[in-house]
Length: 202
Image (spheres, rainbow, N blue to C red):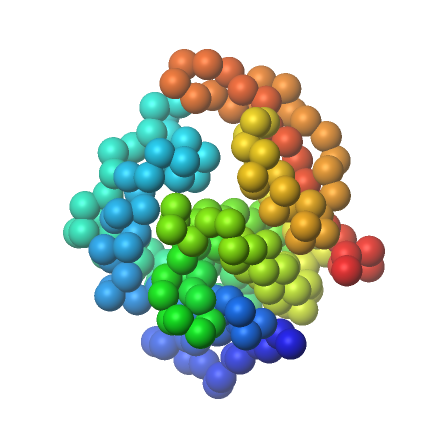
């Protein structure tokens, strides 16, 4: 059974947690900086989930100080959400609901003026293969639809079959491939497009 816990919030300390009793999504805290720094050096996360320059060269792995700054950016986005109701840029830590161990990240990359949300996600290597990413995407998508999203979409670099499987299991529909849309290490790559609409999503 899934649940959404949204206590009375204020702009100084907004709190949103989502759970299905297997995974829990919660905002990041400064205590998580080491986890984010370690994850930023993971080859799969660097390939698909970290910023890179126009030639496809990723930014260096994060230091603890860098990770703390990233978490503060997330906190600022949560404070903005508490004020505006628009969750653009908010990010959740994915946790095992029973173990309490941090497993990965998911969040809202953008929320447009037309109420279209773009999301993203990644898992640390130690947490892969347990279905956590699928459950996290379902929880996140349900929350966004409850907030009024008219459409939730995500993009996946062609060849990232693990992420494609997550999108499909989470009820997202493949809508097409944008040819030569991305770049990685000086090589152009195709990017796949998946989306869910509230009236058809199960």
